[in-house]
Image 1: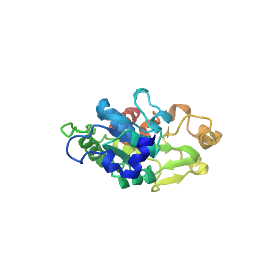
Image 2: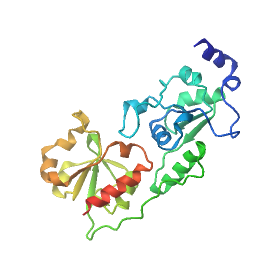
Image 3: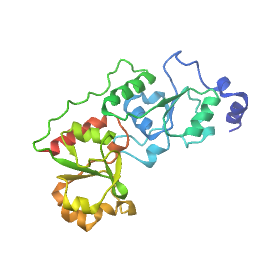
Image 4: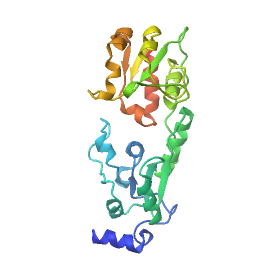
Length: 258
């Protein structure tokens, strides 16, 4: 602990990082759940000093529990002596600012807002971990939908539906569905509207729990309007972060059209 505080006093540039670009990073730290998953998918485990504590709070079956993790504190991250810290654009703003002030190399990966940007997101991560020669995951071609089109309602917690112009809307359209909602962005749903003009199917894209946030999905009117066989379910984690698993969602949603 005393040693890490001395680094704070002297300046992390004296204690931590090697010059950027001299060689591929050997001690990578993640501050963000999405970068946790991307590092676990693409990076050499020997070069990952620690993932964020978020990956243990939101576990996924394919990510081994043995990955090292930090506690989110500045002191602990400095003790890990990273030569590269990776995070998303909206996460750990103060922490990453302190790290940059201390001379630690921090790379910020903005999340894709369109399906077309997923490949570039992967390419940038691959370059950072020294795998520039590895191609990103292959996007499936757009799937033709039925005629007339089938309308899918993507229902989240608190009665919020996902409308047009969103990343999720791109997934639905790529898979051959039409978004039930005509509104832009994220919309508070109206039960009366759904009852009078029901969707062809509902995709429940929220954690399966008894939380109050999920009460809307359990409303008797909604359950009578859309019968059980037209309620679809996917792994919730695949909607949390864009990545190679996004194309698995596209494929699954397309198969449900049959």
